[in-house]
Length: 202
Image (tube, rainbow, N blue to C red):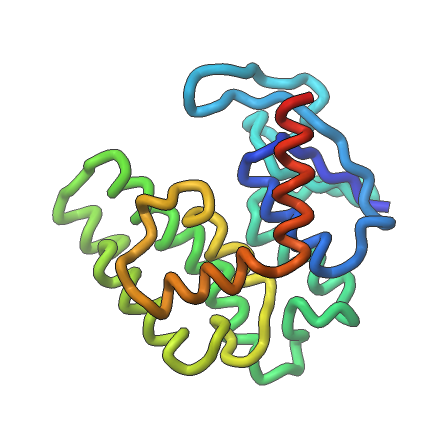
């Protein structure tokens, strides 16, 4: 059994979407915790094992996993039969791992800096900017409907997630917008979003 520490309508929502897509919810115990929200509401929860009191955090056999990409990689490797993550022998494995780690190393920093109105040559040289981010996504999506071509994966869930919460950050690119429409139309995503509204209201 795996335990996911989750706060409704937060970064851990994308882990719920992955779990729903994989069809492994029977293997996951959901533990709701309080977190500090960007608007200042909420508070750290002593029941949360995350070292910074954030989400997501996943517990399995006494191990604690944090960071969305790490959790997604662990789950897709733990349940390879679900097909949501290429295995080590799959030719798409390199691209899959690259997208997962590119998210935290480049994509999210670029989006956060843009949202904060930050601009500095050191930041641009290190992380690049929104133009480069858009070009990278556009190049991948020009080869197929998903980041891995014809194959939908956890990488799509992860990289689509910030645009669902911060729609103004979505690049003005038809391929990217169509990719997001496809992701939002998936039944698993729809089910999770509906459940999240109820959880947040509870």
